[in-house]
Length: 475
Image (tube, rainbow, N blue to C red; front, side, top):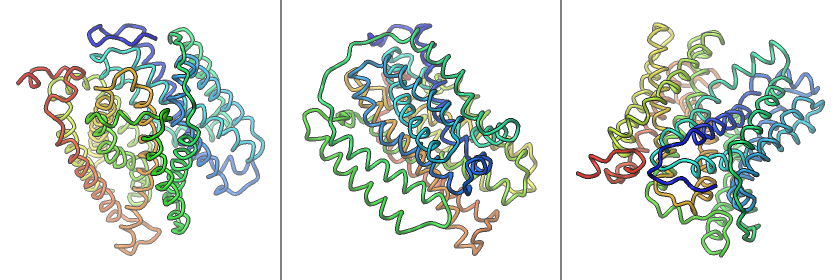
């Protein structure tokens, strides 16, 4: 595939590819959370206790973490068209196997295969979009493929519960079959083939990064469950940090690294990864904390809670058409700082809610939070690829996906830890009240404000050729 130039307008094919990748991302992100509310039905079907099903969720996330680092090498070696199409096929077939599973071990193996397909779909799909979109069209393209990461955690649990209660839990996975077939046909038709690049596979980097990411993801998963096993969390956390530390040391010295770290020399990419990860952690806690607050502290029904979460999702989608205008008017630095402050205000607004707050006011707060979340996600996702060269694209996409995956796990764990801390301070152990959620949301707001520090260092014209913020850049 020939990279698009910076000046040519986004083509119809480029827009279609962006929507194709967004659909694939939605399938991948949805399957990470959709089974959570169907666990009791699945446990009964497998003849196991519900807590045993946690391995099905963990296996999927761990497979994602292990194989994402290799996605860049695989895409460079076999070409994005072949790899993305194969990833969709693997994910679809594995989904059918999940639905046909008659025992927990078979289900776990199928979930691992799903995770491998998802690990290739996410970064390789983003790479396809980067190579088919000129720099001037990146904002719209990446805004299109960003919404699945925001929508899936919100829609997954209620959708899974509805499917399991209306039909059966098997249909959670069978629904991926028609979607996967359509995505595969579209991928073969829209994505151009590209010759592969032959370079040695970095086995040491693969194992070191895979072990490190998997250990950290598992430690984060342990932190999100009560009671917390401190020894296991510390052990897996230490293993993850040491393994990733060794992986970074190795990748800087080997002549053929699994992932090219030169992209970290770009300030725009560093800000999108480091400061951006703090934002993603804070924002990722909302789908965990909000439903708990509505049901446990406010006493709302699952229907009312689901309605309010849909308002958050509506805010996510509503911001997408305005993203380009906001970035063109304020630039990346101004948008990150101004909208980052609004994200923190949104968390404080969540903390101010009570069971007696009018439902209309709650809906406004949810929509406002969704608007700000969407804007920040898209801005950070686009900033990371403003200055990358075509040679850096595959490594940048893999690294960004790795950090995004870790941030998602840390976000849920951090939300659980914040809630647990507030329970200990108020003495409400195991029975969180309104005060506990207020403190938890205040901590999320503080984390959002801390993330602003990284954005302050950006120049005013950072990424101006992508955002179109040329007037301020010239001045």
